[in-house]
Image (cartoon, rainbow, N blue to C red; front, top):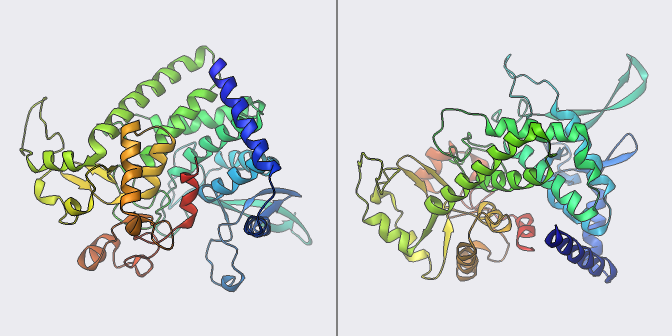
Length: 408
């Protein structure tokens, strides 16, 4: 408790320092643009649109909606500026959408699923075309390209709820009965027993920030890093009573298993590469070294020359007989922010980013992944997706918004 109070006082002092200094012209312009993207519902701000480009107004698909994952960096900026009402409204309104029943071809997703996005619409009031009311229209994936449910939305919601309490000191929000229920519904959805043998979350392709087919189905690092962070946040927010003791125990057990799994099996550096080259395959035993039956031949030719001697990273995915050696920026950075990576691994990731600056950051930061899928790999894995051509969009494209994770 003493440590938490000291951290809170330090955070408050840092916030005051940020708010008291004079903003640069670039910051003022950024705030002007952000405020233009704010969406109001029944007279109150509830979020920001994913994209606010007037030139694409007629063909912007769903970019005029409020996405949970996209609003998080905006929410952090608002909180640091002392504008917390928009974040509180966002958290509560998305919570109300959580309980909505949605179906895709007569099938309903699990209870507790958070929408990927929502939009404020005006509809006639009681059939009267002269009077209108505003309603929130959520998308749980039933309208999305590919019809994929957003696994990361609920995780981001829990993380943002914790950030709101830490920055504002308003812990009454997380103690509300409806908010506690929302947290538990998300946790129940994520912690439900299934067929998987691993502590990681098993998801389909396109269920996170990379929401198009990019070969990340299975146990992608981004989802695991967010899952770990959400579990830690939820553990701090779940009300302590007789009914929550078992839930806390399950969370603690999952955190322990998940952190070991990621740190042990996802980490790759020159030492690990040399170990993989010496792996024996087809081992059938409880004490097998090559537990996932990884064939050394699948190590890409570029990796040994690319990875620095004093650096490393967490691979993008791990499944039986498959390691995705691509570097995914969000997963690695969030592993550092959430302490999923050990201190040594965090230093290795940052060393790699610094050493390979021209590849990962370059002139237009920050590449979402490296390297890009090209030629036959692009054709097979993306399904010939014209939006994800090499070094574009999710396929090695530049995403400056990812830089906010570097700021801590």
